[in-house]
Image (cartoon, rainbow, N blue to C red; front, top):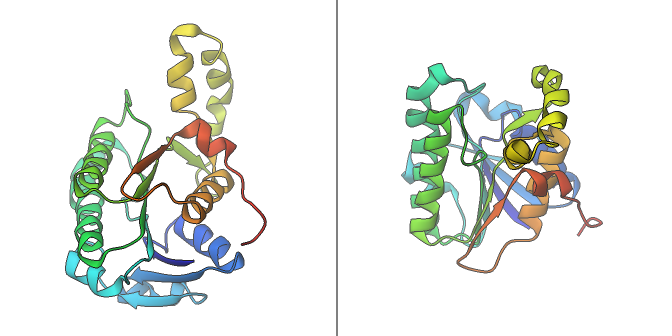
Length: 219
C-alpha cells in the first residue's frame, strides 16, 4: 500500500514507519527540512505539517495518510501548544485530504471522555469533529498513554488499574483509559492501514481494541 506519514520522526512515527517498510508498504513522510535525515528508509518530502498547502502538495491521490503530529510529552501546562500544533496540524491534514482525494486517514486521538488532561482531550475531540465534518474515510485510534522507552513511569499504576477493573463503578473508565504498549500501538496502526473501513465512514478504535489488535502475515 502507499502510505504517507506526518509526524514520522516522533515516538510512535519512527516505529510505525519501520514496521510498514518491513511489511513491504511504500512509505513517504512529510518532515521539516532539519529532520529529513532522521528517516533514511523512506522517501522524505520536506514541508510544514501545519500548512494545508504543504500537506496537499505532498499528498497523492488514493494514499493512506497517517497523521501523528502532536505536542511531545503532553501535560496540562501545554494547552496553548495543543491548539497551535495538534489542532492546526489535523486541520491542515483534513483540508489537504479533501483537496487531494486520499483513500484513508488514520488519526491518533485520545480516550474520550477523559476526566483529566481536559485541554488535550478537547483538542483531539475537535480533530475528530473536523474529520467527521469532512466526510473522510478514517480510522481514529483512542489510546490514553502509550508505554515505551522514555515513557515507562505510568507502569507503577498497573495495580490501581487492576483494582479499578474489579469495581463496577470504575470498570468502564479503567478499560477506556488503560495503558497500551508502543508495540500494541504500532500493531494497531498497521492493522488500521492495511484494513480500512468502508468508504466515507469513520471507525473508532478504543483502548481494548488497540490491545487486541493483531496482524495477518505480510501482505
